[in-house]
Length: 319
Image 1 (cartoon, rainbow, N blue to C red):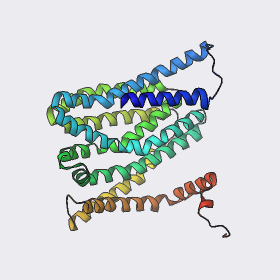
Image 2: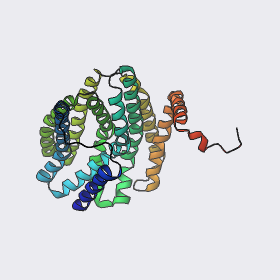
Image 3: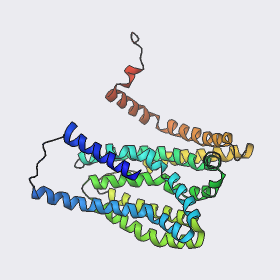
Image 4: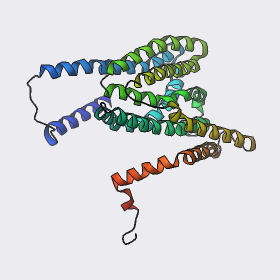
């Protein structure tokens, strides 16, 4: 499978760039000044990627080494669940907004607006998606994955902090790199690794995989605090404006789930999972629409103006 994937990807990319859609005329002539700039920039990007790999894998490595294969299986599945918000929410934005950040790096006002819009979406979507995922995890895991996976549910629920804030760290890191400061992201990853390795070892010894999950949460908080301080050098952003409304929605959704639980409870059924998901998401979305409707309406109008979405909705002959 690995050979097939690598060979296919390399072959298609090579044919595409050299034969089908060659972007420019290639030359073997070396531009020393450009090469020096690219190496100076790229060495930090490469080092950051290696540190990312270590952060993503050390907890799995230690879970398997110190606690055994069964514990590793539970932890790795819980960690996989915790990274879904990153894959679904922030990854689609990375390519688009990374380019936007690079384009606007010398225009602080527009860069600040772009950064706020990206993170505003990440926070609002993450505060909806992550709690729902945590709430329905017991039923989803037991019914869809099987009862043998139920021991990983609490470990995953402990990683709710990771679910909520990991996408923010990704977008903020993209800003630093696109603004020409990849070494700052490298420093953040080094600080996270220095915290994470001993925290994982101690957490595993005291609380097994639950301790490792808490270490992952702590590592993320360390990185997030540092990265948002560093972003203030490049953008102006209000943390209160970014988080206030989603936190109100989170409180409203959580209170509704608690109230519903007092009147109806049927653990282990998909119906109960659906009720919990709806009890959280409906008030959460309601709070956002109530307090931020004008912003959403403006966003929809801008999207319609840029993409012409309304012409697919209106029927011919109607005004």
